[in-house]
Image (cartoon, rainbow, N blue to C red; front, side, top):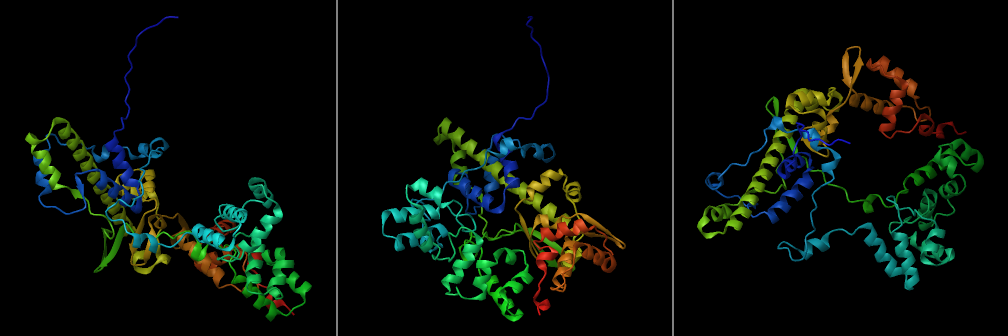
Length: 471
């Protein structure tokens, strides 16, 4: 085996922490960016949330060498969205009581989580230590909907107790607030809510107890034939069932809703529209003049201190540059959306034009995948309401008079179904014919079915109401 030395020349991209930070800032949603800025202000003395004067002049005097930022066209953003570096996200520690702005009033005024609410009831209702243990285990075994995900047998094996004891605890647990929590399935959950209202002898309770499958598949005619009741009474019972909550963990005790704060605001100005960055509740971040002066006074600082301060200064500048690039990119994207979607901004969703990522990418000068990731979880406030940026992107559907957006077609399909006869709902094929004859929109039946499912609209059979046919 011969050994030899050889030289190879190749090009590769070296990732610097600063460059990674620039790209991460581009894709961060608003809330995460706010966390990042707050975190950086805490650890970097050169960043401040107070507005100071003459900072730009101080920067010029202190820096021996301007940090070399890569030119915008030299940054291969698409490479950096690779999973290898995406995995290395920022970790922001929670504030403690030692923080200056720690407030007991703020902490205790926050609403309880559903888990805390349930555990409080467990400790109030049950006195025996084993009963409390079972109640706590049930609480930690609930699904997102509030139903019990594990069997009584599994709980018994885990806690070394009998299924009868677990059933006894669960029977009381299901009447906790919200009622129905901890039920093993939807049927038990709905029945528990009726039992709590003392409605065990009602028609609605009988329907759930004896004809649940027929009820779920909307086979009302079978229930009518077996129960022998009039249509008025049956319709009233169905209305009562619809008032119940099949997912007790949702609603008031559901997951905390994320308040949407738009990144960009589009406003009407005369006959045109303008866009701006939404700075509401956004932390101000600037260079700290105090530390700029400390770094400037080299006679009174040590070499290692000077080195540390310069590193922090460069990091601060890259941070500010990243925020600037992010805002500039979002504004450029929004400018293009305004150009292409003026009819929507004036008249609403029915006037939404077909638009794809390539339309934006060509204008901004970035790859489509970069645009897609940069717009992830970002929102824009328009005269027509607040929308995620990706709302504006839809494929083109051909019509006799030109083309329209798939979003507009979905809205038309929804309107057609809303206005149909409930006792004789339209099939997907019939909706396709209506779109063709009435709106000159030609799409296949399977496309109608796809749009209907995306809008969470039931099939023809499940939409049908039989009340008018009952004799």
